[in-house]
Length: 280
Image 1 (tube, one colour):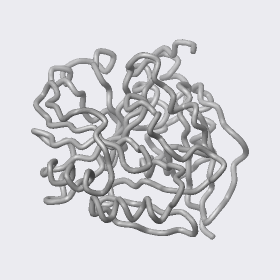
Image 2 (cartoon, one colour; image 1 turned 135 degrees about the vertical axis):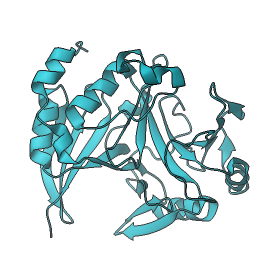
Image 3 (tube, rainbow, N blue to C red; image 1 turned 30 degrees about the vertical axis):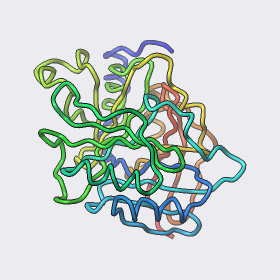
């Protein structure tokens, strides 16, 4: 993939930040939509909302959602997907309570519990469909907690160059860089961040960009299996802008259930769905 320079990014950025972008949900294909949603409700206390044959689960603060849908002909188990390719991080002030709930409900450990470099407790687990769940208890939470309840914190994806990817998502998509994993990086430019994060301007949810070997198998799944959804004010203009920056549109724009939907892949191949409310 061609190198994207700072000059190129600056010239082509057309006020993405003015779009008031929101990171809305990550979608996964599962064998049984209702069973998957109910598992997250029973195990983590998440809220469930049905929309036709699809289900959305959100944390108590409604900061982010997982969408479950069913495409029987597509992949619907994720046990073989590397944790470093994709995972969903859930932050909590009572990590062992939710760890035990997950185990009792048929979840499994992916790796043993550990402390990261800044003292946060981390437990990598999987739900019954193999989806990658990372429980985290922060020493200093990045986002406001809902006491006693877990909350979505970030979605991790693997990139071939995570620093370059973070800059692209900021310049073209209007996301922000809320923190770096290494506290010492807070005084450095983004190009020196060890593991960059990008988040929506509303400070509800973030994405973590990893660069850990050739583990980008998430991008091979396709939109029939998984994608990340964003909401903007003007989807057509927004997509034109990110395509100028190296993204590629997949298929035609379509309207469904009061939304204009356009699907694209970022320059690193990740599946992104851009949505705009347009009324019924």
